[in-house]
Image (spheres, rainbow, N blue to C red):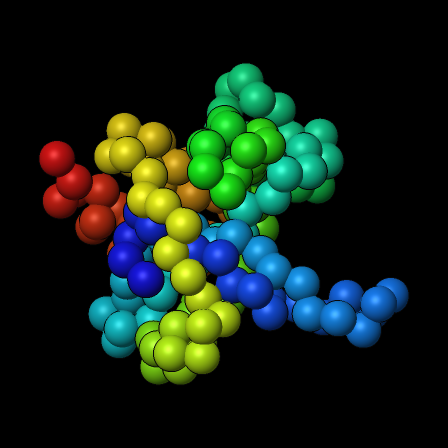
Length: 141
């Protein structure tokens, strides 16, 4: 999982109603110094998140509007900016080898930079995550 890539995790959470695992799309934002990854979930449910402006830090659901990205993502998508645990790089390797995690697409640099800037400023982004995100932004063309 590289920064700017969207992956599909086919067993991301357990649906308590059905007892089945459900998938989610994840955007990798940055790598932390120890190798863990800063990721956020994509959602197609607006829950009050606006399309304009695309960066929304309000309650109860802060997010960044990505638009309709195409391919597997044929519905309007937002990056959920609520707090999220960092992902262990070793777990990513295991999930990829099991086929649970697959690359869907990479965002173009312009959209990715906007998403990074919004995520870095989000209330639930930790200082360590913000630093990694801003360090990455400084390297993007």
